[in-house]
Amino acid sequence: MWTRVEPLHAVTYFHPRARAAYEAVGLRGYWRGYFAGRAAPLGPVDAAPVVAAFFAFAPPMVGRALPAVWQLATPQEALRARLTGAVQALAELLYELPESHLTEAADLLEAAAGALDTAGRVLGAANAALPRGDYPLARLWQAATTLREARGDGHVAALVAAGVDPVEALAWRVAVGQPPQNLLGRGWSEEQWQAARGRLVARGWLDADGRPTDVGRAGLQAVEDATDRAAARPWLVLGPDRAARLGELLDPLARACHRVIPADNPIGLAAPQP
Image 1 (cartoon, one colour):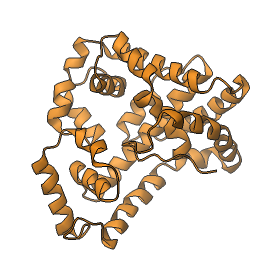
Image 2 (cartoon, one colour):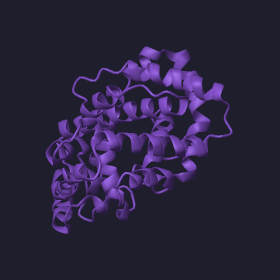
Image 3 (cartoon, rainbow, N blue to C red):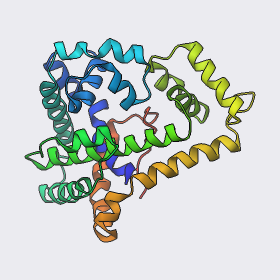
Image 4 (cartoon, one colour):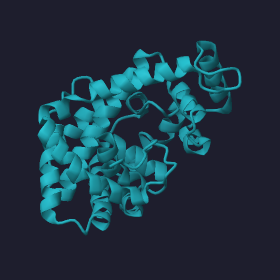
């Protein structure tokens, strides 16, 4: 389900209409739009809560964006721009699908999002509290975003419980094949990257040459398994029949959205399998 829900949300990072919508409210430059749009459900926050919730970014990088972006656009303006850009992107990508298909998918995806237990899930809860969209594409994007951010909250919790810090998590992903250029732009210094690799070697997760070990693969698989367990409730509440139907409805949407998502994207999102 993640491979079918995440692409709907991810158009906000990769489609030119999404970036144009941020620029229209004064948020020029990719990272201004990213931090303002993703943090806006939390209100006009300073950097510290966003460093904690977003997890992967170095504090100085977040501090350069927040709270300064709120001088350019209020959280309410950023939210409108975020939704406008996402809906315009989806409209361009999904125009061939009938409205009945989109409406049924939105109904089921909203039912899944409504089944979330948001306790301990800061970004998931903030997005769940936003007003419901008026049209199927807006409803689809908002429900997908709520589920996506709630899953991310659970993933961060699993990493913290496993004792994996942000730069270690990034260094591990590079070690298992993620292109380094996709993750180096998170604000960490070369010294911090080297220290993180050293800690992974000392932990036995990487060998002396920086290659993943069986111990490391098992450790990160445990994190992924914990993430999946924490994200299971919406699909269990939806039930197998409705979840299967939703998967069928989302499949062509996810494939269409993948047209604007790079194959080597920093999310690690592969195209959904049949």
